[in-house]
Length: 292
Length: 311
Image 1 (cartoon, each protein chain N blue to C red):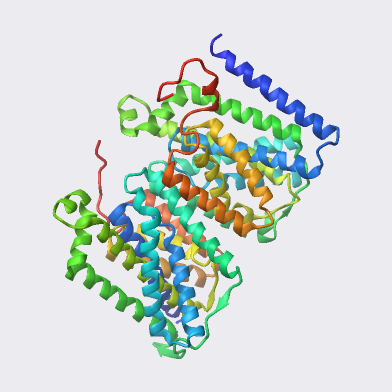
Image 2 (cartoon, rainbow over the protein chains, first blue to last red):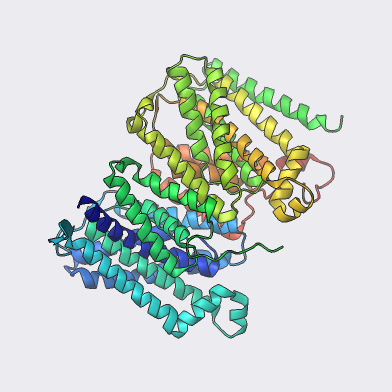
């Protein structure tokens, strides 16, 4: 039953990707910007969680909440400093600014605290092996999955049941019309960044607790893969990001389990290329035609 | 006659630059460090100009240029080290294989636009790097031994041909078609331009010259590792083009020279270098999104009449 075990591991890895992908997809849905700095918000979240746990001796949950709060503020700061001026800029300018912000955060982090990695304490999450249909499943994977599912339910609630969520949906549908209806567009966009960044921060803490090792450049590859997950699910679609993340995580684990662990990173990009070629709108995306 | 004047000016300027540098290297006034720096600058100019064709002229946002550099570098290194071919032939083979890779990558991905294209090219560059990482024939992660064959003369000849071909391409019928694609793809299509053909063509030519730069790059060091061709390398090339001005050939040449000098002097402080790089990039994008030169060329300064837009 090795496969089942790998599948569960893949799903919990995928739920981390999904948490990051949600931020990408919400931001893309609302201002059509690939926020490359999102992977670095994830990294900052992992470090804040680390300092909260080792420095202040907090347990997992308070560390998670602190990290989410700080990341939310951080995300809004990034948006206010860099992206707000780009509302009417060309797509290339916006994309390059996002890449620039990403590198700036990474190397400022290295400049401030050095490039050396840190290790989360091993006992942050309960670590027991659970026997399920003959497969040994780590309780940590289940814990991660549970955390992600709870966060996603909260997100669904915010997006579909609150006034701010309604404003977010309205702005992503048509920014100008939303402004005419009296919605404060700038505040809504900042709020989107705050939620997306909080989820990335949570993903950072969960990632740190599960994989132990964190370092300033850790956000690059999970960030890119989360983007792949967002594209796979259909960028702009919230359920799409969740499903895309979980599919991607499962595929990666199965590729590793099949003995090609060195090719694991390639698998994500091959999925990306295939999806872009055959169904660029993703699993849940809508087809849009370009108008003149 | 009117058109050949800038051409001869360019040839004379190139001959002077070559002669002066060759004199300094030959007479020993420039030591190994500086002559190596000049070769690095020339390689970076080739890279910048080749990406300029893809991004600046055709408007296709590729952020995986290091992938083609890697293909050229590895293929030419295999040609010289494993098959004992002459260096010049190896460079050309590297360029051709990189162009073929560009075709294979370009035909499916160039149907995508804007952000999606950028991500797809990034994905392809990562796949190329991971493939090189996993092939034992070229040394895998440990790298491959390459002998030092790059000289100033060969580098200069490659640089000269690259700039000449791309400048002439830009001013030709095909170049104007590419600019039309950049300005408005749908309108270009309506004017009867085969947009896919021109996008793939520009992409393949850009990849070819990136492959040429790869051949020079790999034989300028003693060891070749897949780690040299990561996202940061693509980003380095991208910033030359963006900072110089999207659509300005001389702009990308100037920024390649300046940034190579800056990064060489900051080589001992890699973090500071990256912070400065990224800050410059963000600030330029926020306050001067068209880059330092915009779409103008420095040669416009020597013309009697100011060039009217849309050159």
